[in-house]
Image (cartoon, rainbow, N blue to C red; front, side, top):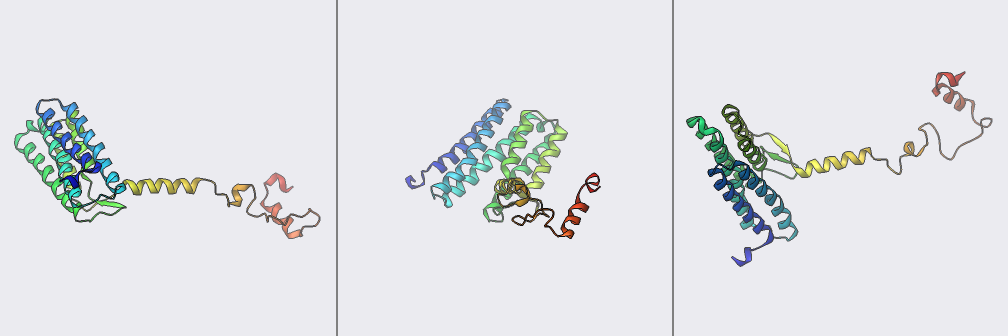
Length: 226
């Protein structure tokens, strides 16, 4: 086991511990504290992947541990929180909807492990944002009917074939858009040279061809043509 001890796996283990804390706090009715624990799990979950890639420590053990931690932190804990907060007011439907969310999350993680996702998009809504939404709905005590619709909608979206862009794709899109809007050093239009003007071939009005002067006169504002 000593070989499995790494910064990335410790982060994942911390996410799993935060999930347990969230369940305990939810059982005590401290839903805001439980939400904070789920947010802490999300922060730790966002750090373990980059740490593993930087240390070249990606492997089967870390992947399996990450799936277990994600299911506990973003499926079991949020579903229990929402059931405790409001869904228990509709006993059969509320318990069934919470169970559907937990099972849909397991299917979503299993599909993720089968490498259906790529670097540009996810197939189905990823579990961490879905779990955060459910936990927030519990902390703010959403009405039972709305909570029921929300958790079923998120469950269906997770196992759907809808594609969602990854953070890397969104970031690359923003960077590409900025590059398109920024002035390019070689763009003559942005360096003060008009498209019709030929750099390096400026001549006096008396030396220019009559057709060139006529082109500029036609392209000029109305008052300048007279």
